[in-house]
Image 1 (cartoon, rainbow, N blue to C red):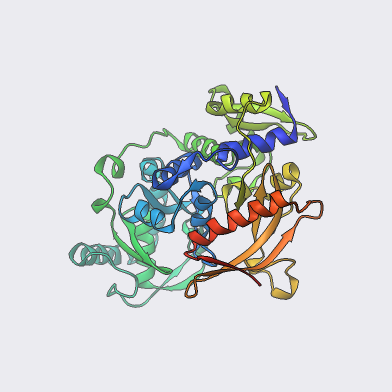
Image 2 (image 1 turned 45 degrees about the vertical axis):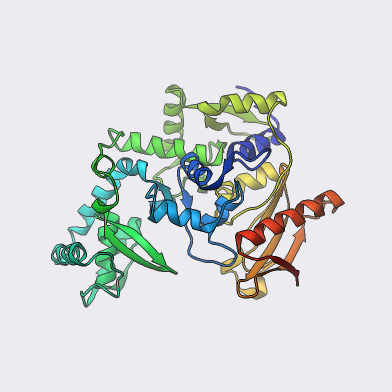
Length: 398
């Protein structure tokens, strides 16, 4: 097994993710290509300076604008909103892989008395009237969702029947999200937007173990390099230590992943075999590792395993959005600043969209960072691009 340095591990991860060197992803096609590479990117509805999925793309796709993601989702239909690593966005072409996931949803839904009748009514109404949100669907009353439904986003609660029926049909795969207005979702029939060969395509995974292996392989590709440890990068996949080792052994035997040792780390790391040329280029010093500055989203694939980030990058990050203000060390929506192969600081930048001014409310450099002209120049350029992304032509330092 090859041994690499921590710096080489960092360089490999960032090169794989398109966060160093020359831009590998450009424009809307680049945004789609990145999502295909990552497998999924997490969706979060909070919009301070862009939603999480938008921020993820902005940091590594040259010229990315928010409308591009909307078009890929709701016009081109190349991407879908659906569960994976919690709420996610992933390529529509992967729909057949999740057939067993949808089958479980239908089986659990059948345990609720009367739900089938409400689903039939809802589907009939949508077929006749087109896209609906929960407040438009003429179904009244409430449904109590039991915790056994939690895997699909339902918890013990009383929920409006219209919303519950739409959520169930969406998780079953009968509906897709047609569009969103703010946080409100509008649903329509999946058959109207997904090609038959995708909607009814045969699952390439012959059983649940094969599906789990496929998902693990996809998460490794999303991060670039993952260790044989309990990892939040595997969130949403049913894995314990024994099963994880079994799956990693299977993927190794099938030639789909390679293992590598990282200096100072006691467990092996894994990367996709298709990325071995990149790994060897990093080891030989031939990879494009030219420094580039990016503001990283809180739920970016790079940040999925914060323990790994701490171990390899010596950077401790906590998303403080749900931390009481008096207990915050930094800001409400603080983004890590990546430059070269390390995190150099954090920034809280909030756009005033009416005045078209991006306000820098907080900037915190890491203690050992030397603030040079080169670094401040990179920050100024990155802020200008971040301002354009948020439709702001001016930068204000608060």
